[in-house]
Image (cartoon, rainbow, N blue to C red; front, side):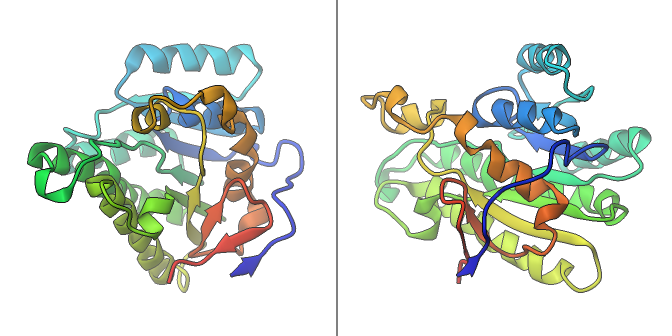
Length: 258
């Protein structure tokens, strides 16, 4: 286990940084996007929900954040060519990419593996594991041009320790953390790119409600309460943190997944 003192960052610590975040239209993605923009980041908002993206765009500008960009995309149906097109489109607007947050995720159905719907299994894997790989692969040339670039995957306790009935979601999160570690190891030597995962913990969200419909969301940690961890991991304050699973609700520890 590695120890850091806290997730503190100076004001406007992300000024002039360009950061792409998936699943930006709602939930944690929306809240984090607003927080990053308030710190000066130019946020590239990726989601399939165009109307919600447009509303978020307006909200960021209304709250005085840096002017964002919108990139509508459905990760479930995206092809390798779609990711190549994304790279070309972003490179036409930005000289480099300083941050990439893989926030989008699909829970799927909680059931025994032997009863798992195969079509849904493939969909969960596509969104939670294949898409982050393909998006990272497409964005790496832009991130290599950044002085200090940060890639952040999203971890979960059921990926770190398998749990009955979590099926495709748990497997996809275990794979995501392993993918993070491979990339962190490969990129550490010859680039300025750091790669980590963040575990938001139990947070009020639509996904959490889907897993625990009887739970009172007002009794849970709110997305606004964990944004500082994301800001820290996108800022140069975390430039020496690599290959770690960060617990967003425990600001004093980073846990390596081994």
